[in-house]
Amino acid sequence: MNYKLIIIEDDPIFTFLLEKGIDHAELQGEILNFSNGKPAIEHLSNSYSKSHNYIIFLDLNMPIMNGWEFMDKLESIATTDNCMVFVLTSSAYRDDIERLKKKSLVSDFVTKPITEFHLKGIKDTIIEKFEKNGIV
Image (cartoon, rainbow, N blue to C red; front, top):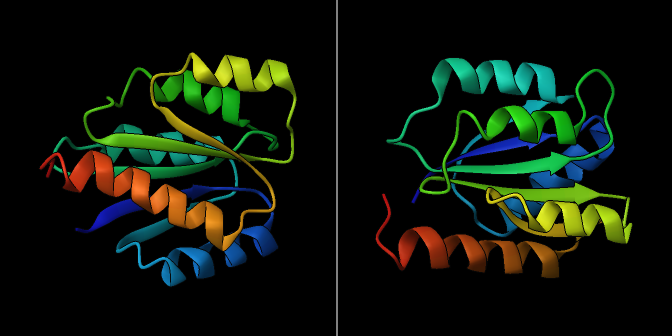
């Protein structure tokens, strides 16, 4: 199954490594990169479609529009039917984790650096939701 894979991350080196990891994990789909939440939410506001499945890799700490602000806006556009957000952050604060657990679109929270093990778990979560449940 092909996905819309959206990476929202301000560190170009981490973005590069994440793209390589996505490729290695064999997650198929169009990859779009954004350096902060503002252009990403603008893109989704104009192109979000219920006919696509969206996998969003979201950094929390970014300039201009951070991950928290992005999530607040995304909740008015996307649904859990076809969108999964994987939060990637260097912040492992308990308050952040508890706050993220309350966000219905957030599927998982991964502390950087992301590893092949993390990506395999993410892929399994995606397959469980979209492919095994027949969501197209």
